[in-house]
Image 1 (cartoon, one colour):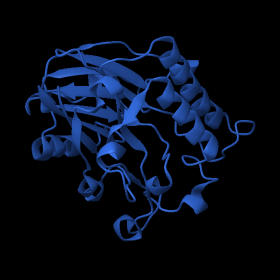
Image 2 (cartoon, helix red, strand yellow):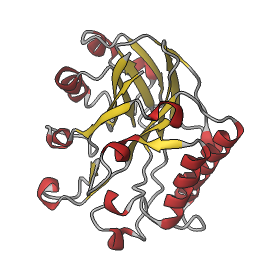
Image 3 (cartoon, helix red, strand yellow):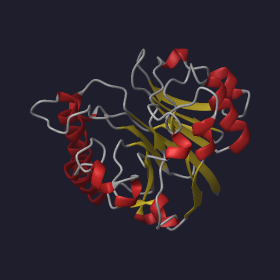
Image 4 (cartoon, rainbow, N blue to C red):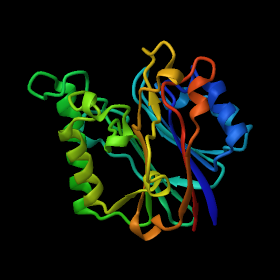
Length: 262
């Protein structure tokens, strides 16, 4: 069974319903994971997505904040939702496909502006979320699983436009990278995107603040697709649909894709 999966921080699924539809029509992933949906589940415009063949959904939502959803052409069933760091936020949802693969969709806290938990509660929440994630993987080693989402960390030097200039900027600080790496190692996760595209600058996010984001190209790779080692070798075809960042009234993130032959 081959299927293509995409992950995208949509920054409001209701406001950008047409962009979701555009991606579904143009790229047709079998499974689409969205973060920052900013909508209660019952307000998600599911009918429009069903009309394009996405008849299956699992989701967790909040009014105006956070929110994660998985839309699929393939049958799936909900496989849990955890409240990492006890924040009471809708930041995780899991679904299981009929082939037994479990997909975990995460929206890790952004962490605010100051990389110091003593003065910035949001940064502490981010680190706590990652610590809980690490501990969960130690307690229950994942198998036959894919983890995707806006993890809000660009871990490698070539995942940011300037490693030196961003070392003290939230999303690329050494402590964040360390926490993310510990979570990845605890679950024996393989970074599918970087396995397929091992070299060179690679970004999935460009700030709204940039007057010309494309020309400036000051991006970061905040959005990730990981797989457990037992299925990672089945992954291929990774890509980032950069053009989506330039669509009308876009999200500041671009969708990340990978295909699995299982």
